[in-house]
Length: 406
Image 1 (tube, rainbow, N blue to C red):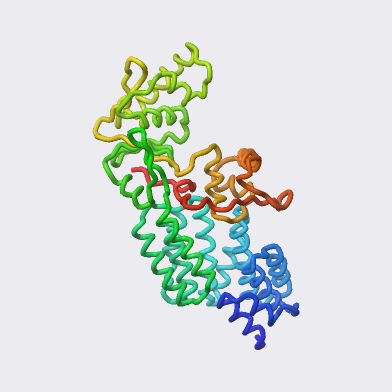
Image 2 (tube, rainbow, N blue to C red):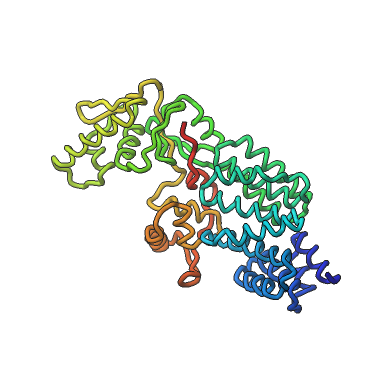
């Protein structure tokens, strides 16, 4: 490398893309194209960055496998930031293998972090944690150690392990300061805000109050009977019954949980579960059938007893019943939760992360766009959706990462 390429690379490593561009902005050789691509990515011009990196891959000769692999890794990071989650992982795997084969452990580890971050976004937490455990960040420079700890904290947050998350974020903060990269320090600070913002609401006795993530962790570890509207689960102690695929039964369970220790009138249960405006005998008959089904699925945890005006929940071993709900509830809350990270998402990436059809996501986006809660740019396959984060609220519990059910 010549002196300008070396100086530009050092500027990028220090988080100074403008300084890098001053040295290589007018050059079109392969190393300069690669550095220009990384600089444009750091400045936020992702389309231009992708174009430059692809030109660099073509410009590098067949004997420059390491340089080509580094460009592939940089392009994969752009795809992650762009929430292009449908991008095949084979190219990144091949690039990582090439880097490992040639002894570039730092960039190979960075490729692994990109894989892990993609898995976290898709809710595949077990696989992400398993791959992350294969890396030892100790030999890496401060910026890489900070990135490692951010991923560790992200997994711990989704596991509801707040102490582990705080420790990881503290280590990330120290490493970011040592790296002296302002953008990295800001990323650590942004991640830390999640632990100090309401992550859910506790509904009990007719009142609701916000809960921090740490309080949610304590609640789920207690012996309280919980109707979990974040995960569509009814749980007590170590026993949990998932109703994610039985929305009518969960609607009944939630209505009964919110009214406990009182009962719920039949008309209100019919309206909550079936959405009926005009109630007739067919609705009452269907309610009896669904209540019978609810009794069966909850038989180990509680009974659903009939009263003069409706039904009441009677837990078998718990002395208290609460409902754990999302901090903000509306029809398309899951879509908003993913968009709340401030990044731009495609509808296909949202569908992949939520485990639903792309058409369903598109209908939700159109509905949210109609009321001004999301905005889009681009057309066709390049169309992306985004929304500013909701101030003061964490969205961790809305992400599609399943909690362990014992």
